[in-house]
Image (cartoon, rainbow, N blue to C red; front, side, top):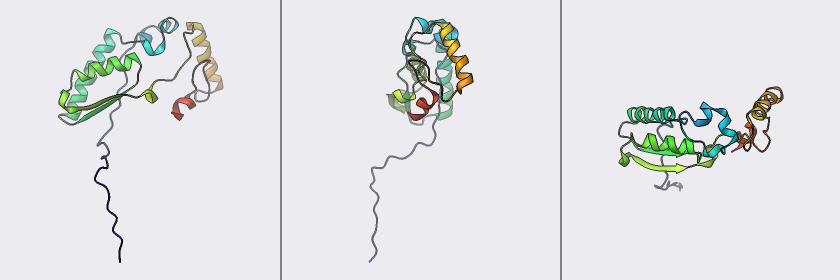
Length: 147
């Protein structure tokens, strides 16, 4: 006889598409000195960043129409703020899940460094190699890749 393999019917289908959206302009994008007084994960959006996030929400809505949406965002405040703004453009019934996912957070550049120390590290990184240079109290590109 022949053995028949029956696949279980609880397998979740893969998404039709994955759309990546970066956060809007952050306080740190506008002024690097913010990183010296505020923890990176607490840095939020500027007003321009909120406007950019709302526009991204409208564009996402145009792309997906009435289709289902599952959102994954980093725990960083700027990503959380961006997600909130995007959600304003979507029908709540089409948003099937919103999940905080720490593995998609940005590279860690260290804790509350002064602007000159950050600039020196970035220069040293150019010489050492972008992917392998590890910031003091932070991560290398390799670490981010390994998440």
